[in-house]
Image 1 (cartoon, rainbow, N blue to C red):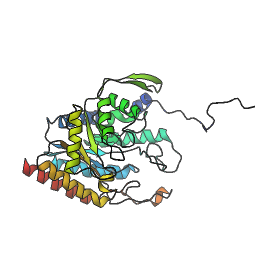
Image 2 (image 1 turned 180 degrees about the vertical axis):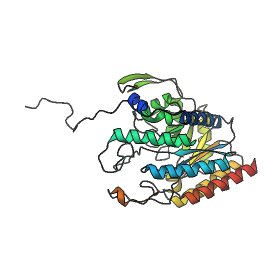
Image 3 (image 1 turned 120 degrees about the horizontal axis):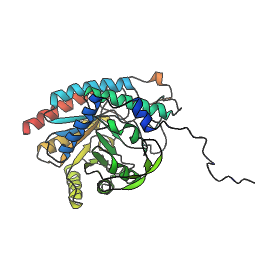
Image 4 (image 1 turned 45 degrees about the vertical axis):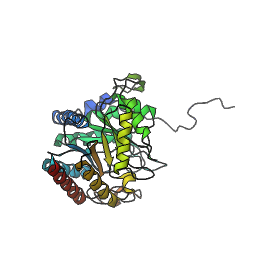
Length: 350
């Protein structure tokens, strides 16, 4: 007669290295620390409209190759130096991918792209990459998907996001309340804006929840609340970057006595997940900002070295360099063209 009732569907457990051990092995360098602290302060000032520049989060849909990510970072940094008077750039360095059903769950979960799912290696390589990008002087932003991951990488992140699939999650709202960087909250995959507004409300106040400490032990976490948040419009059943949708978002924020701070994601449902659509969204939103809509504080572009995406068939050696293996991205050439055009438009209207 079977009497075991626990772990009936668990194949096994592997211990994670503790966050403290990881940070001791890869400590935040002085240069990286300066980048993070300065960028967080700047982003906070942009959200509070004390800095009139616009925030741009740009980069690959997901990171799968450190070499390509570093080349992209070098290009983005050089572009930032050309447009720094009107745009403040953060590189999109996304290591975790929430899946609607199944699929590759990102660089931290499966860094070898081989199904081995060596998370210890994934966390180590992710931290090293964040360190390298920050040491260049370029801040990094990422989405917080797993509840434990931030303990390993958050000290190298200047801007964070709660995604469309998790913005209704109580656990993610609690997590955001304790994170040290400004946070963006995406509307739901169906376009529901209220979930993002409610997430922003919940994350601004103190929370108590179960988490892990620096030693990796389960613990009771008590937070102070995170006052630096904004909405990210990413579309839903229809795009929501138009003036009426942005006005609706603004009124939703006003109704909850929240800062009128809105970022438009030019990809995802706003572009119908086609890289060609991002340019149309970008130009529309820039024109709205130039026309005087100061509720718009930022943009997001899914951008890579080369346009489009590629299917991953299980053999990393067959992948094309600099091409996304998740959502479609615009090319570097298009990114540079759009950013320079926007900088000229915005500067001309100042």
